[in-house]
Image 1 (cartoon, helix red, strand yellow):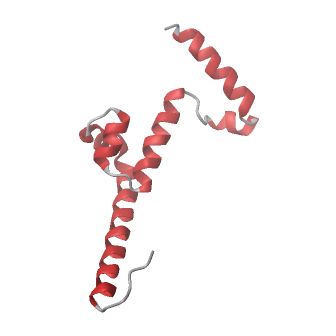
Image 2: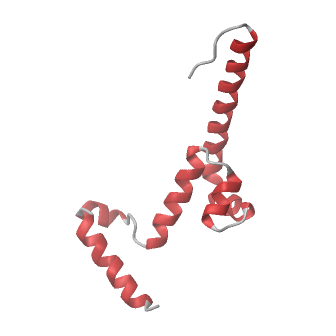
Image 3: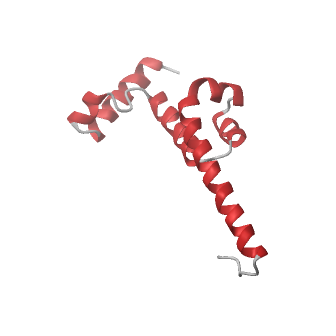
Amino acid sequence: MDFAAYGTTWKRAREYVLTRTERASGLAKRSYDLRHAGISFWLYSGVDLADCARRAGQSIEVLFRHYAKFLDGARDQANRLIEQSMQECDRMSQGEVPEG
């Protein structure tokens, strides 16, 4: 693979699709930045850690090391899902019909 050509192509693509302000901000300066953003988004969205690791081709240990700041968001999302399930169980135990 010709990494110099790849870098040149990436730079041209950024110039074509991003505004001057976006380019100046460093947005997607490297193609790796998109990968990092994708994994961060999965974690923030509450995707299971094991699934994120599998999709990224990494171990869970690597996710903890490099994406720890996003795991707090994942924890919050998990807590919301658990709370919703607990509320659903309470409603069902009181004889209410489940939603959905």
